[in-house]
Every structure is written in structure tokens, then in C-alpha cells.
Amino acid sequence: IKRSLSTSSPMNAVIKNVTVIGGGLMGSGIAQVAAQTGHNVTIVEVNPDLIKKAEDSIAKNLVRVAKKLHKDDPQAANKFVSESQARIKGCTDIAEAVKDSDLVVEAIVENMDVKHKLFKNLDEVAPPKTMFASNTSSLSITEIASVTKRKDRFGGLHFFNPVPVMKLLEVVRTPETSQETYEAFMAWGKAVGKTCVTCKDTPGFIVNRLLVPYIAEAIRMMERGDASPRDIDTAMKLGAGYPMGPIELADYVGHDTSHAIMQGWHKKFPDNPLFKPNESVQKLIDEKKLGVKTGEGFYKYTK
Ligand code: 3HC
Image 1: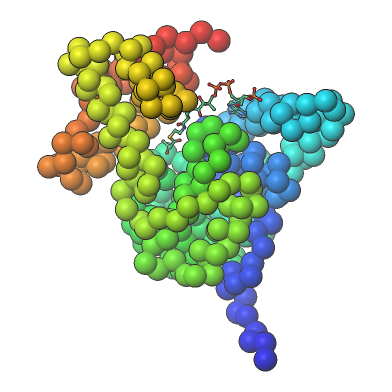
Image 2: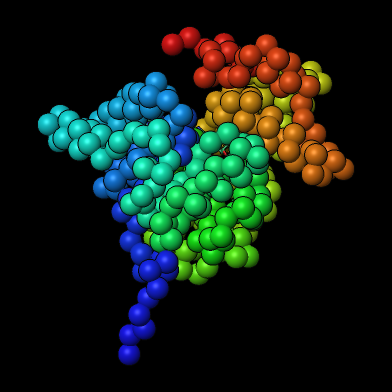
């Protein structure tokens, strides 16, 4: 006997239409991998200029992926790029952007108040079937979800930068995330080509809980003058097999992002010395040297 499903249940749901809120580094990467794996994607940004910026960055990165996928077939590569691009549209109106959405992935600024405002609004305008996910690196998913009435259809989907290259997706379950939502997230992660790991809703989940203190320790080592940034990076690349050293990686992730994570954790866990924010990072932020994206962080970057 088959039980009928309520319209709000994502059970057996196939996620086809995806709305990505925020067209920054992470949002545009998430939109790209969804589109290149056949999903219809709507990117939401606050103005048309930011949508254009996201689309340009996606176009550039689609070409890189296409070159790898279709090395000896430029025609197939062009087709891959144009078909993926055709699946993406930009939108500045949230209600319009979510009206047919199966899944909303939020990738906006790491600020609880801003996320609460967004999700409160989304909860009112999105259809009942729509599942919500946050790509937050460090904030509590349970706390973000608390302003919605669909806590069973809410979880974390944490991607890594650069999204088209990094193969991991952390799927975060809160105590209230339903089994159906969790399974739909795992299936979607696989559908966008990622290997999924599962984690409870704990600070930093798996990767950032280990990576952020590691980067901060490396910066403290540099601040003490124990070794130069170049030598710390070379050491971890050649001695531990990391693709980037910790100082390079800090510049790559962006000092605004990692500093916001550290400050949030330091406030919550003031006694944990691993979460103590670095003074030299604060100095870089004051000087607007946020890393690769602004052309300078601990290192200088030329295009
Ligand atoms: N889109 C598509 N393709 C890209 C890309 C992008 N944005 N960035 C790089 N690539 C491709 C390149 O085209 C290249 O392809 P090829 O092998 O076919 O030539 C390949 O990736 C390697 O790139 P590069 O040759 O430019 O340089 P590297 O070999 O040094 O690789 C890297 C670059 C993939 C970024 C590598 O250095 C790396 O893996 N670094 C570590 C990144 C990392 O740790 N990320 C996690 C950060 S933490 C995080 O995201 C969590 C957040 O919450 C804070």
C-alpha cells in the first residue's frame, strides 16, 4: 500500500530547480556546479551589476572546466559552456526567484542578523516544498533555521573554494533536519559531482574546525618570527603534502572571511586559545588587504 505524500514533504524529491542567494565567490561557484550538472539555477543578488559580475566569473570558470572535460573537442567544450550558461538566470526579486524552487542555497555575508532577515522573508515567500540550506562556514545552522517554520527542511550544505574544483561537500544535519531532507541533500550533493560527508551542527563542521585553527597557528608562528611566511608555506606543501601553504591559503580564502569566523568563535569560546584572532590579520583588514581578491594580503598578487 502506498502512502500518499503531503505536498510539503521532500520525500523522494528530485532537486531540479535551485536558487542560490548571493553571487560572490561561493555563490557563483555553487551556481556553476549546479548548472553544469543539469540543474536550473537562479542567482539572487541585490543589483544587476552584481549579477553580471557573477555571470562573468561563472563564464570564465566554465571555460576552465570545459577545457579539462573536453580537451580535444573544442566544439563539445563550447556546447558545455553555452548549455550550462543557458540554465542560469539572475534575479533581484527574492519572491520571483524562489517560486518554483526545490532548494535554496544561501551564500551571503557571515552575519546572523542578515541571515535571519533573509530566511524569515524566504520562509514567507517560498512554496512549502522548498528546502533551505546555508553555506555558512562557521555559524550555527540551528540558529539560522530558528526564524523559519520549516526547520525539518533546513540543513547545511558547505562547499569549498574553488567550488568547481574542490570535491567535498559537508552536509550538516541539525537535530531537527528530517531524514528526508538529509537524504535529498546527500543525493543532490552527489548529483552536482561532490563527495559528501555528514557532520553534526558544530562550530566549523569538519574542515574549518581543523583548518581555521591550523591557519591561525601558522600566522602566530610567523608573528613570533619563528619562520618566514615563504618557509612556513614551503614546509607544509613539501613536508605535509598540502596543495597550498597556510599563509597562501589564508590569502586565498580572504582575511575578512576567516577573521569573521575567528571572532565569532572567540566570542563564543573565549577560553579556547586556538580561536584567538590574529593581530596581523586585523592589521591587514584595516589596510583593506583582504588577500588574493584585493591583490594583496600577506603576499602581493599581480593579475
Ligand atoms: N574554477 C574552475 N577551475 C579552476 C578554478 C576555478 N575557480 N581554480 C582552479 N581551477 C583549475 C585550473 O583550471 C586547473 O586545471 P588544470 O589542472 O586542468 O590545468 C586546476 O584547477 C589547478 O589550478 P592551477 O593550475 O591554477 O593551480 P593549482 O594547481 O595550484 O591549484 C587550487 C589551485 C585548486 C586552488 C589548489 O591550490 C588547492 O587545492 N588549494 C587548496 C584550496 C583549499 O584548501 N580550499 C579550501 C579553502 S577553505 C574553504 O573553502 C572553506 C570556507 O568556508 C572558508
